[in-house]
Length: 510
Image (cartoon, rainbow, N blue to C red; front, side, top):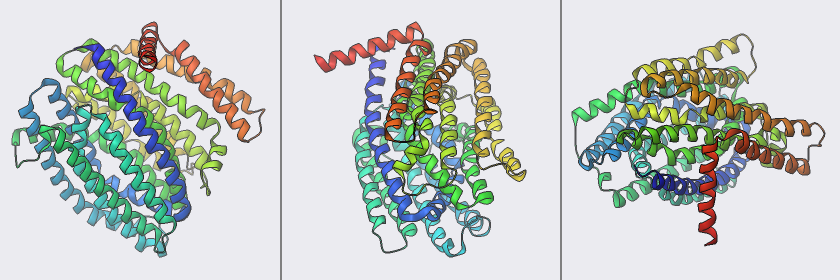
């Protein structure tokens, strides 16, 4: 496999995805401010937790979505166009079946749980039911988009995401302004408009794929063998998908049951910040993941391992580069960003950023696991561990623990899961566990610790104002960049970075 051309493609796609990310992040943070102010803390919390109920029923969709992406990317690596067409059509059939099943579950169990168990003020229950229905339709539209999105990512046409995101961001910006001046029930109207935006995005992705990819035209093909393989793969992956949903949305429900919708609003704000920061890593890994899968499919193990090590390490550094300034200056940033700041928001943001920094190193490991197709034992062990988030958090709350416990438990279990991943992948693909611990884990944790020392020390001598914010943010960024390169990178990593920098410099100044 031509490593140089693949590396160049990853770099190009990463830049395109970063353009997409910066655009969506800016609009997302601004619209969050407008929406939170327009809806109020209580209604914002209601929207966050009701949407979480719908996501709880998306356990099956998460596992099947991963199966679809893996099968399409793997077959592209092998170059079998005829089978690729059958995979696409089968994946659409699977999503339609899934939509029917989940809709029935949501309209029965979901409705009952919303009206009988969730902590929602009586006068807002009718609005919550409307939001629930809009969320169901939005969820179904997102499911139908999965095969098309998987095709775009597998072909590494990241420019499509960048261009379509401009439309998506523009629409959501319009929604935010409409809600701010809307004379009707703002919560209901917001749910309706978000559903309409979802329908427009779904249509655009479908049209783009049909015009650019031969395999992305749906035909009535029912390949029982292929459907059995995909469901079999998804069946074991269901454990991992369900554990993640149970951890995230289950935790959100526990917050609602023990602390009410105001704390759900705080979590909603924290997850907005988390999503914005995490998009930096997601953009990078979206460009890298297809190369990992294709390398495995073509048998280029050396290149695959190189990508796994470098992407795990650089993912953490990217997250630290953005997260450290936010974690140190969280109260001041929230005052600048939001008009209303829900209680618990500061601690929630700091804890969730620590969690996603740890999780960022798991993404390339999960990609390798999915590429092998042999996921049963992996999902039983790692998925089973992640499922413990919900009962352990519940027990903590029953014993009087603070609201922050949901994130603290997630962080502890995340560490255990990462060690388990390394042990399992050692057996699955002969991943050098000791080298990974030494050259990835040890280096990134050392960089994080050293980088945080100077900003934290200086913070104790500064007032909480804009000048201090600039000083602390700049110092944090400089420390992360300096120590990531000097301590975090091996000689091979440094040579790679110097080469990429020189290529970029030559292109700019040629």
